[in-house]
Amino acid sequence: MDFSVLEVANTWRVLVTGAAGFLGSHLCDLLLSRGHHVTGMDNLMTGHMSNLASAMRNSAFEFIEHDVLIAFDGVFDQIYHLASPASPPVYQKHPIETAKINFLGTLNALELAQRTGARFLLASTSETYGDPEVHPQTESYCGNVNQTGPRACYDEGKRIAETLAFDFHRMRNVDIRVVRIFNTYGPRMNPNDGRVVSSFIDQAIEGRDITLFGDGSQTRSFCFYMDLIVGLERMMNADDITGPVNLGNPEEIKIAELAISVIAMTNSSSRVVNRALPEDDPKLRCPDISKAIRLLNWKPEVSLQEGLAETIAYCRKNLLRAST
Ligand code: NAD
Ligand code: UDP
Image 1 (cartoon, helix red, strand yellow):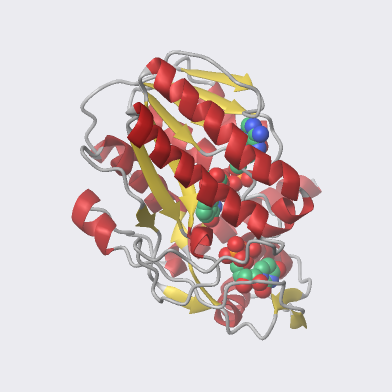
Image 2 (cartoon, rainbow, N blue to C red):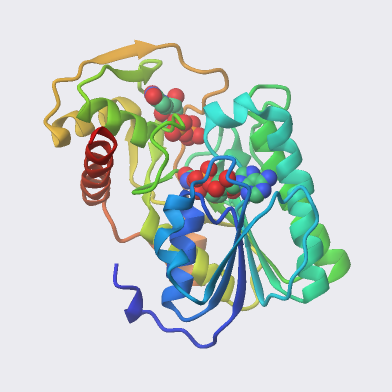
């Protein structure tokens, strides 16, 4: 996507928490390309400095290694709050930390937004809908989350983060934006964090077994990162809107079909092996994005085929670099 064709009205001082992660680093690159002054904050729990290689060469970028659990200060016009583990195997390995990061980390970021008068955007998630009984998911659906299950640290963590954002808005007049991000993929995803697109691609390229959880009939809807971060920016800069707004690609696919596509696109000899379906794994997921279309004039432009091709090329290059 050519970022330069999109208009920018102002130059802002922007804080991005979770800046060294997959989405945070791409967001920093987009904001820098717009001419903003960007501060990236991250404790490198799941992110990597290599994701910020191009941002670090830009004099309008500053990186602060910091844990959002510890209160922080600064002067900002906008805060994009992305800091949180996002992959199910990772957050299930660190459930107490995940719940804390989403509650206390979001509280710290909101308190900073209040002190400095910044507009605040929360990167929430489709996981707030849990294993949904409404399909596709609309923002008015309150969800079906098992609050004692292994995904709850993340699902309920993001739900309390949304609650905090709305209470800071109601009680303290903080200007908030809440987006619910549906599965997003692309270059810079950590291949070891267990998320399905990067796992399947790396397994296929290396000729290893493709680990299909359950019978693969569960669905997801995959959005390419470029579409998503443009949506985040649109939401941040839209007037008179708090959200929540769903951002994702409504092109729904069974996970078994994703495995077949990845094998075909990588020309792989890998075979598909079935593994147990993780507890509380949502059976269906697809965003209703009519609100984003109407309020933000936003919809994804990159098809799954195009996005997968670019991600496969990136993973091939990365694996080659790692092996030499
Ligand atoms: P990621 O793991 O690549 O990035 C998260 C970043 O947050 C990492 O760099 C990590 O080191 C940082 N972080 C974690 N805990 C921190 C802490 N205590 N202090 C400072 N930094 C901390 O994941 P991502 O896919 O880029 O996700 C970014 C955000 O978007 C997350 O909030 C996630 O919940 C949300 N989201 C992502 C998706 C998706 O499909 N990628 C879907 C829904 C929501
Ligand atoms: N999945 C899979 N094999 C893997 C990783 C994930 O079949 O190696 C499935 C997982 O059970 C889920 C879907 O792919 O149904 C998406 O998983 P991911 O962890 O990427 O994200 P989720 O949407 O579950 O948060």
